[in-house]
Length: 266
Image (cartoon, rainbow, N blue to C red; front, side):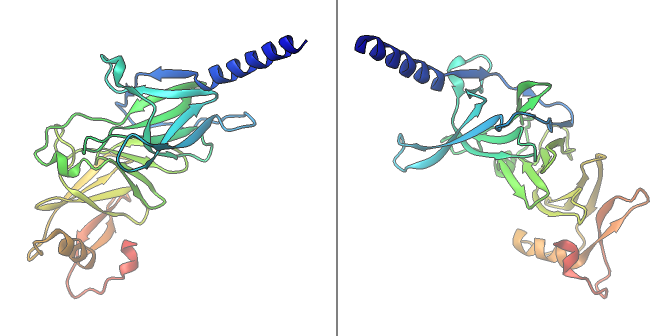
């Protein structure tokens, strides 16, 4: 009897270990148009589990995350042609919808460059892994490839190429100034209605209304400061938000005698 109980206990233990080691590797698809990832899920428990782990393989202990879809550990194969490029380690993970069926993740990467970012989401009843990557040959790409940047409650800007709204997980391609390169400028402002993104480029304020793809390239008025830090403050004090005939809000240079309420920019 003891032998039978021992055998049963060992079987349960082995089965549990096997369950914990269940993994699935996904080759991400490319996002080519605006897309929503806000599917509902009626299950009692969350369909995703985020696991915090400590990486002991580096000189400094740092936090990393794993993601489970139901009971399966999710791996992403970064290079379609190389199975060894699959990884389950993420430097950051965050839900991007209230249903908690969509995650924005960034790989844990020690290369020194901004690691790739992905959407992991339930869609049409299946797990989708979507790459947030667009090819670019910009001269200053290294400077403006900064990974995931949170823009307050509005959402996330990824490498100046994607804007992801919080709450409902709308993923939008940000219209480029030059189709062959990501926007060569620093994001500095978001419109009061959170739909127009403003980038400070060397000679202008490149503005994108991401829901419509309408853009305005507002030349910097003279005399403008030379340093980026001074320029940002100067823009806040010398430009105002104004709606065009379509009701879209863009920044416009204003008369220096006009009193500006700084709350317009917050």
